Length: 188
Image 1 (cartoon, rainbow, N blue to C red):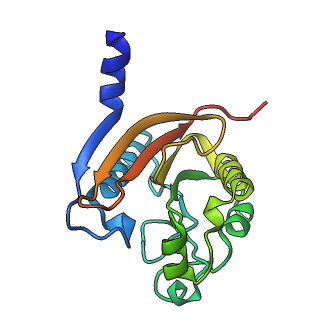
Image 2 (cartoon, rainbow, N blue to C red; image 1 turned 90 degrees about the vertical axis):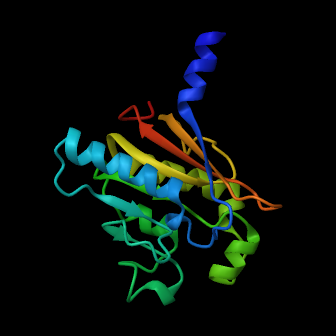
């Protein structure tokens, strides 16, 4: 039992995000820490000069080499694509990406504020399809950073590396940021 506790402690860290807005998740320190951790691994340890970073829900985050958002207001200044996230991911070649930033709207409120529509992310079939496409496009041992209110695996074949709990304070929900690694080449 002690081994399990020690192992679990190493996988979770808590960061105080009191007074910060969850509107642009990439601006929260835990997300930035995970992103820089992965980029350092890719560049310094694997010698990947320009890691391929895919962001299907980019909004105004410029970290991805391919950035998508269904809201056309972000297209000219922030994103490279303006499609539904699933359609965007389906167009990316298999085993071509080093990192996926998976930060969809967490709730109907956020979806309505950002996109003027109900949240597709809460529809189980859509979520499974997104996870499958993320698995497909990632290279073996590639990473996925997932933001949301749970740490469910994005799809089969991923191993949980670390979770950062972003404590928002007051009566606001904490945000969970989980780092996953693709550990198998195929699902068979």
